[in-house]
Length: 616
Ligand code: X8Z
Ligand code: ZN
Image 1 (cartoon, rainbow, N blue to C red):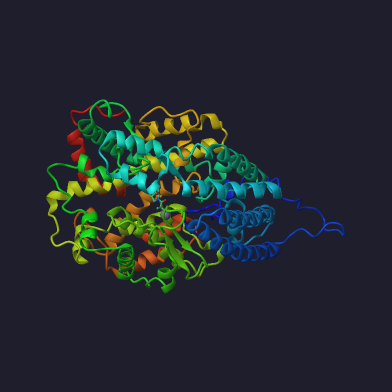
Image 2: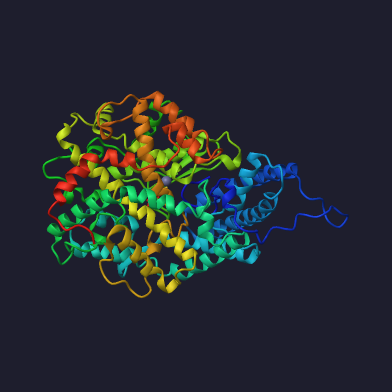
C-alpha cells in the first residue's frame, strides 16, 4: 500500500464502539426468522468468514491498482490516466460494496475482537468514498485521476514557449530574496489550481454522498473516525496539543516577522500584521528553514550547512538514499531489498511528466518497497529521504500481519518514524559518518535549535489547518464560492500568514498544495510533528544519551532499534495508545517533548521579543 497518494487506497481505521455512526443506509435488513424466502441471519462465524474474504479480495485488487498507480505517477499521459481511473474505479467499487456489508455484519452478536475491529475498518476506511451507483463511482475515479494529473503536470507559462513547473518555481521561492521575483513565482504556481475547483467541488459532493450511504454525517466524520476514539472527541485532542505548542509558535512568528520586516521593509512585511506568504522560503509557507540566514541568531552559528557538505562531498541521489538506509541498518534493521534500488524513482526523469511529490510504496505489501522522489542534492531532500524510508521500514516491519492490520497505529505514526531518525542528524552524527570534521560547541545550540524550529515548529499550525479547511468544506459549512476566503481565514487565524496580494475571483489556493488534489488527509502530519519528539526522546533515553536532548543521536543503537521495531511490527492490530506505550511507556500524545527540546530556544526568543509587539 502506498503512503501518500490515497486516491486508491484504504486508510485503515480502528474499532471504537462509541463512535459507531447511525444506521448505514446501504445495510440490508438482517433480523427476523430464517425462512425459505429469506436467508438465515448471519452468525459470528459468517462475519469472520466475510472479513477473511474481504481481506483476500482487497489485497488482490490493491496490488493491481498500486502497480497501475505507480505507472501513472511515473509516466503521466492521457492513456495512463485512463488506466489509473479504471483501476481506481474497480477498487472503489469493491471498497464501497464491502463497507456496506461490513456495516451489516458489525451488528451481529458475539463477534470476536479482531472481527469487530476489522469490520469497523472496512466500513470507515475509504479515503475518497463514492455512492454505490456504478456511474458515480466511475465519475469519482475519473475526477481523482484528473486532479492528481493536473497537479503533477502543472506549469506556469509567463510567456510564449516559456513554462515553469513546480520544481523551478520552488527553487525561486526557496532561494530568492527579491520580493518581485518571489511574488511572481508564488502567483505563478497558483495559476495551476483554479481549473481544479469545479472538479474538487464535485468530488466532495460524491464523496459525501458515499460517506452518508455508509451512515456517516459527512466525509469529515469518516476521516475523524480513524483514531480509536469517538470522532467527535478527536478535534478536542488536536486543540489540546495545539494549545501546548502555540506559545512557542507565537514566539517564533514574532521574531521571524521582526527580522523579515528589517530585511524587506514595511512595504513588504509589516511589523504588526500577517506575514505575507511569499517571503518565508517555502511555496506554502509551511516550513521556514530556507530563511535561516535572515532570521537565525547572529551570535550563535549553527556551525554547518548540510547542503554545502553534501555537495562538497560529491553526493548524488543514490548515495544520499544509501546514507539514509545505513542509519536504519545501524539500528539493526535489514537492508532494503535489491529491487528497491532498481524500481524506485530517485531523480526527476527528463523525458516525461511525473508526480514529483515524495512518496513511499509497498507494491506487493511484502518486499517490493520503493520510493518515488525527484531528489536534489540538498539538506531538505536528505531529510525527506529519511522520512520516506521511515515509511518503507514501517511497511516491512508489519508485513506479516493480516491485510487490514498492515498499517500504522494511527496515520500520524507512519509520518513520524522517518522524521524521528532525521532529528538524529546532529553534528555528532555527521562527524561519526565522516561528513563533518569538527562538532560545533554548545555556543551554537540556539542556532541549531532555530534551524530545526523553522522546519518543525513553523509547520505545526499549517499541519492543523489543511484539514480544518477540508472538514468545513466536507460539512458544507462553505460553498465553492467561499473556498478560497475560508482558506485565507484559517491561514490568518492559525499561522498569522496572509496572501501577498489580492486573490483573483477564481483562485483555488488550497488546490496548489499537493495533498488537496491528491486527497491525502493532512492531520497526520500535525500529529507526526508532535509524536516524533515523543519517539525521539524515548529512543534517546533507551540509547543511553546524556545531556540536552537536541544533541542526541541514537545512530548505531541496537537497543533503540529493537524498541522501535517492537512498535512498528504491531502495525494497526491494537489501538494506537498500545503502540505508543510499547515505545515510550505513555499512552497519551503529548507535546511536552517538543517544549523540552526547544526550551533553550524559547528562552532566547522571549529575550529577543521582550520589547516587540507580538501577535497579529
Ligand atoms: O507529504 C509529505 C511527505 C510525504 S508523506 C513528503 N510531507 C508533508 C508535505 O510535504 O506537505 C512531509 C511533511 C508534510
Ligand atoms: Zn510521509
